[in-house]
Image (cartoon, rainbow, N blue to C red):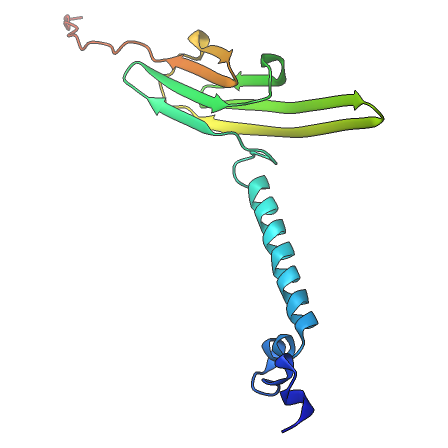
Length: 165
């Protein structure tokens, strides 16, 4: 029996190889590996949020429903006002952009508290053919943006008589 057999991290020395062996033999190396994985996962999530259709750092929940008469879009935007939101339409897509600015300041008996929260997003939603973008309506109420994009009524089939020329 060796003294290293009495140390918990020394018992398995030499039984594993490579990076796993280094972290198993040294608790500080194991801790460093764990921290590296946490940091890598964090940056992967940040990077994927930038590449997920442009939602940016804060991506609001969005619901899109289509019926025979219209396309309805509902976006949850708590802490924002209608002045913070910009909607633009083209024939093929709708883009919703917004920027959140929240500041809270409190002074009381020698304590000064100031909190700030900022974030921006944009969401591009493809539109089906036939949506009448000129009749679109947007309403912002209780932190929820609701956009209604009507479709023109369906044309009825009719016959055109052919005349001799």
